[in-house]
Image 1 (cartoon, rainbow, N blue to C red):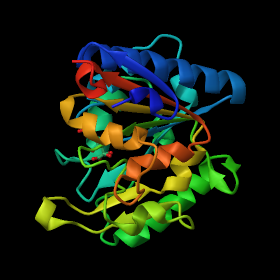
Image 2 (tube, rainbow, N blue to C red; image 1 turned 30 degrees about the horizontal axis):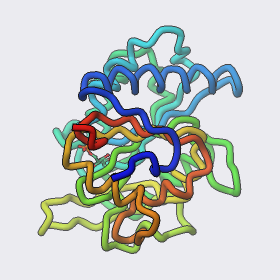
Image 3 (cartoon, rainbow, N blue to C red; image 1 turned 180 degrees about the vertical axis):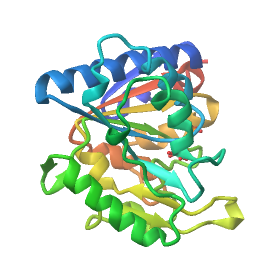
Length: 248
Ligand code: 6PG
């Protein structure tokens, strides 16, 4: 694979610990820059296993004015916020409980809502009312993404039409019991594309295939939803360990 063809800057590091350290530093830099440029910063978080140590170290970054940082989610699983699979819980344990972020700045997706379609609409209102817009789409200053072994990003999964949706900001995604996947809430491709800075964290050899599919000259968005990053308007940085980058 030629990871050089990934859209944006590629940072290839030794191992997961180096990815976490580098990601935390870059996220801190991006938040500080947003506060300097616009007086506030919006941070949108993904879940998964990879970002936890990066979030923990982000909480310790010097010079971030946390009172001016607002936190949003890229996606959430349909579970209560205390559940082991909750993306809110992950962020709460690793970042929100460690950095002095005012509770009023934290805007979680209601994965525990009875009606997820309604929760998706409600989160669209949150995004539209709290964030500045470009091309009528709310803009995150800093978005953290992962890439699934199957090529998904956010909760935009392969084989589903959700990655093609352009007229919504947030969607409810049905459960896929055959894949042991609960229902989800997710921002849509246009929201990710408009983000000012995007950091994609990927660790482990299982990410090599999907990364190669993003880097390929041609490919189907529905087969590899992470290819939506080819259309990103902001700065995309891929922070990979050697196994994901294919350097081992
Ligand atoms: C989620 C995510 C998802 C994640 C990827 C990568 O809630 O599941 O937001 O898009 O980023 O699945 O996950 P890993 O970090 O576990 O590889």
